Length: 119
Image 1: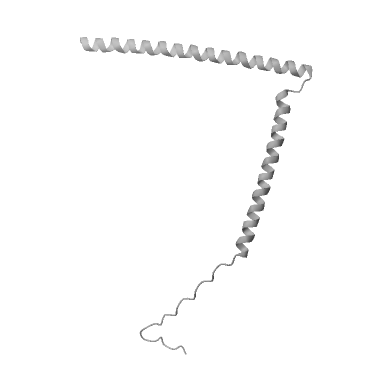
Image 2: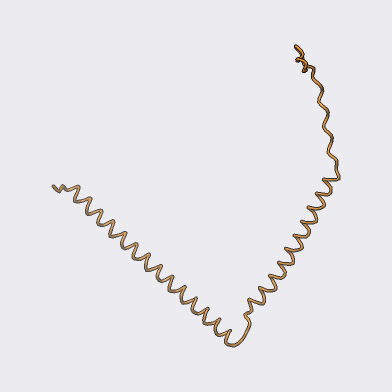
């Protein structure tokens, strides 16, 4: 039993699926093109690097990175030493400062019958 509204719904569903397939196909094509472009750039970078290695040159970036790393390490060490000294000073100061003594609690007299004496 096929009624007109069911036939219409099936046709609309087919059209929607057709549009989805086309959108997926274009998205897939775009992602493939992006991967290909990325691969080409990577191959060029590797070829340039191999050419530099064959010439025996040290990459410029390595020398710059070494200098930056040395500077950063020096700064970090200095900061760590300063923090350690500050912590030690704070601990010494805390130990020197005396804490106020607690006040003695007042003795409360118990009311009622006295306890039995032990023999």
